[in-house]
Length: 440
Image (cartoon, rainbow, N blue to C red; front, side, top):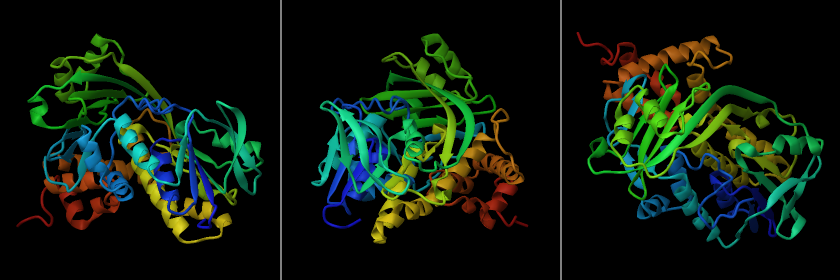
């Protein structure tokens, strides 16, 4: 993959596609990104959830900072806010607020369009990367053994874009399963969880002093499946997103939106929406099913094709894992290409390398989803024990700063879940937030 003349084609100019292109620019003579939208107006219509609240976990922010040095500062210069998690933002989990404490984590509080715009501009500056807009990919070119490019249509009609490597980063709307069947390749098995999540989002004018001067509040879905968030974003605005599981979705009318906010387990968001000037009408979004496609289990994968981002694993967006896992997949792609493998071996090695961060995030999200009785899925003994232990961790974290810190570092994918089982932390959790061993 490092030979002169190597051409990589990336499908999709969202977060996953931009990060993949950035990595590929280190190894390929040419990288071409294809996107069906016109992107110069700053709105990416291929990201239907782009109008809603997005959370960038600190692990993902760190990867982006490594790939695009100074990107956090770029975002701040353009109006984004940063805050120390728990010390400068509010998190409600398990029905109460996690105790404020230092976590060593940084939240970048920004809208999805601004984050994409900064990464897109930085990617376009790379001398060997080209972004082609208003291009629709119709199919893969090749067979079950090897992919040689993609068939597309654009302003000039149909064409074939030849490539040594095709990276599908086209998101939840990816047609990869159909494309694989068309060329006679075996599609991967799918793991699915039906969550039927619904969002409604709205901008409000920010006023000094609201939320005690803090930058955001996140209220996790409670027993009634309702939750939401309010974040202070560029333009001195609140971006407020309400969310409901299992078909209990927030309405898009003014009164209904405010009533739904009042039904959430903590009052902070309701106080913001009733005490602020609305700047637009609520916009809705629906996410029915979390899907994980097990490319890592395929006995054979076509050479010249890699699938990453939501096309490989589409997480419940409540947990804000998607952008960070895409960043970790970009790191896996970089590690794979650095190994200098035969190109035939690259896709299989990539899926093996990316499997660990994907599996970790999937387990965390699936376990949380399955804590809602209405979500259908396999509740193994491990799942039930994990959820019971996490519930105790939530209760301890409401007043124990050490447990709260560890819990948030696990949620941000900075530390492994095993950190919550460390004897010192586990003792505090099992004793309800008291020190371990107990004082005599």
